[in-house]
Every structure is written in C-alpha cells, then in structure tokens.
Amino acid sequence: MDEVFKALADTSRRQLLDSLNRRNGQTLRELCEGLSMARQSVSKHLAVLEAAQLVTTTRRGREKLHYLNAMPINAIAERWIHQYDRERAHALADLQKALEATPMSDTSFSYTSYIRTTPEQLWRALTEPEFTRRYWGGVALRSDWQVGSPVLMSDSETGEFKDRGQRVLAADPYTLLSYSWHLYQPAHAELFGWDEAELAEHLKEPRSRVTFELEPNGATVKLTVTHDGFEPGSPMLEAVSGKRDFSGGWPELLADLKTVVETGRL
Image (cartoon, rainbow, N blue to C red; front, side):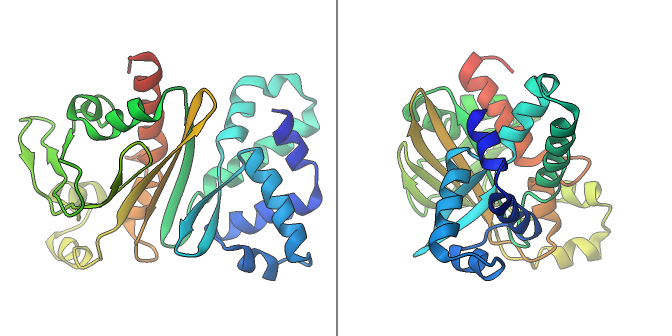
C-alpha cells in the first residue's frame, strides 16, 4: 500500500483523481485542459497513479483513456484502515465513496482486478460454460470464440442456450476478448419497472460491447473490463456498473470470478 499513499500524498495527483471522478474515461489532452500543469508533468503523475493501480487505462484507436480504479482504496478501507490515524482514515473513506460513486463516464464503464492465476486459466474462466455458470449466477456462455460467431447464453433454469444477438467482436486467446452485449429482456422491464411501451422504447438503444484485456503481472493477471457503447443515461449502463439496487454489476461479478479462479469456491 506504500505506492497508494505515495500517490495520494501529492496535490496534483489528487486533482487528477478529482478530474476523473467528475468525468471518467478522459484522454491525456482532456486531463491537461482542466489543470494548470504541463503535459509532461501530467503524464508523470498519471504514471505514478497507474503504478499504484489507482488509475487504469484502455486504448481507443490512437487514444489512451484513463479511468479511476477503486480497488486499492477498497483494500485499505476493508483490511488496514484501523492502522492509520483518524484524519487519514477519514480522507481515505471520502475518496473511497467518491471512487465508488462515479465508476463510469456517460457512455462507458471500466474496472480492473488483479487475479492470482495464469492468462490461460483466466481465459478458460471467461470462455468455458462450466466456469461461467459458477460466477454468472447459473447463466453460462458458449461460443467458438471466432470473430463474428454468436455468443449463446443459457437459461439459468432450463439450461437451454439461446442466441440473443451477441457476437464475438475480437478474440486473441489469453490477451483480448470482446463481444457485443444483449438488448433488454422482459426480465429487465420487470426489474426497471417498465411497461411494454417503455421496454419498446429502450430496445431502440444501440448494442453495447464488453471487452476483457488480460495482462500478465508477476504472479497475477491484470484483468481490465471495459463496457462501452452506451447512450448517455442508459439504464443498462447503471445496471452493469452496479448503480442499481438489484444489481452488483461487473464489480460483483468480477469479485465472484476472482473467487472461483483463485479458490475454486463461490
């Protein structure tokens, strides 16, 4: 945790976190515009934040997008908060709430987890039905994971695999996996409290996509999940980010994935 405290000790780095807290998924140019710092200084501060795992990044073409990552703050708050003085503890608690309150931009969500496993084993956990069923709440995924192929989802009660229009967008074994997301189902209408007309209106939203990036990191694998392509204010974005009361979203699902991979239990 030394890297986290070092990163938080600098006012400029806290300003960068504040900027991302207000609007997640910014490029270096966008971050520079909101701060009175030279581009080189901003880059150096971001490197420190990345090293402390407080900021995670993804690529969009030639652009590098920066996102907050609450995991290190959560670890401090949940495991070691009692070791620090009250003033520091209050500051960390406030930052933890801020990071958890806005884990997304208007159109995307990104989350990073470090899992003690190998890229090969994590790839299996992401792609094989016998694994996915264990942390998807009984729902399994099945595909040949070739670009353009369907991603079938099983019914948690009958086990029947159905095509909901999801397609593989990119697949580089042990490194990158991306597929389109399903549209709203009747079950969503019940959860969101929509009537048939409201469901029909929301079905006009474009399909979003989820991308998994796997990167070896010593004895662990850095897994970055980015779910983007939403319209601003999309209820589906709120659900996958854990903003809705009935859904823990990707943070909860990835916590279960980590448990399954590391311990074999759930």
